[in-house]
Length: 174
Image (cartoon, rainbow, N blue to C red; front, side, top):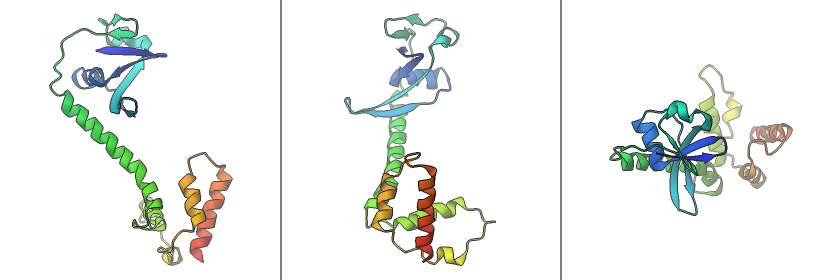
């Protein structure tokens, strides 16, 4: 296992992370990312460098961090790696889905997506006014779509976000 020193942390990548998490049983959160220069998905995870001797007393210091020399059964690595790649692709597809809805006219109207999201948040005990549902199929204006497509958390002051939501409420109540 190779542990690469990155600041105050030691990180294990791909096979080394597999050995740590799957064979040695360390409960570390995997970080899955696509490295463009390699055109490859990399799975990594780490822990504070100051606990290396507690976790791995036999770890040997190297110029780049530490290594743990031993023989490990890597027969399950490919299946595990493929599973991690699938999780990454699924996450990426979920992140792209709202943008595709806003930019793809063949997808359901964005207002419908917003209503579906809103209705999934509501509980059965909260009544929905009939007027709130009367304009479900009303399309958003270009101005609304442009604002939503550029929106990111904390990009605008809360007052702007609140004003936009109020504008949407007024628009859909007309």
